[in-house]
Length: 299
Image (cartoon, rainbow, N blue to C red; front, side, top):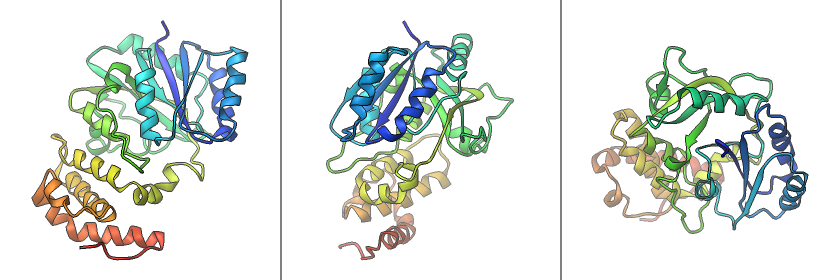
């Protein structure tokens, strides 16, 4: 049985999916399955993937679903994956030639049920590492500690044990299409550390229609999903007070955006949320101004 599934959520990305495919064809190690979750595309994604499957150069599995957003595509992927490990490579990203080989070799040498997976590096296509490299004197860390204890910065590539990624599914919220993916990662941080692999596993391109460059729109259009995410992060037992306060500010802002009058009753930390109200209101006004929709929330 193959060890790794590379899964790619995609929505109307046929125009860039070819680059991802070519990078997988070029892998020096073919010990992986490529799982494509087509999240309701209306372009020629299916025809493109059908052609690649006929070619038979790598093992490809394809699943189509009605549009649920990135987190819904992740939910589906984790239910379908049959390999021990999985890694998400977005439709506009590519993998360096040795990436699969290094993941497989590294896990076979160091992996065990003590760890939830591997943290590797993301880079731009010119091989410039995004943010900081990983601490060279550490074998493992939680994702939270990597950023908030050891000073890590920038996106990292996460490889997880599949049996663990089925835990803590993302909620599907009517008329919304986004829940922060880090919710699951922080939940797993409660029990496991991740092995650190200080090598580039993914080359990233932030396209204009990508989630990263449209975060203001995501924030405005998915307030209930953001509120759920912030409430969960406010309850992390290992998080510092400044981290939790930032989550409370975002929770207040998202509650204003969704016109949730019960947000003080629903918060896991009433005192912190009350302190965050002035700052959350300012953030709400900023978001509305960015959207050209400035108006006070209903009371």
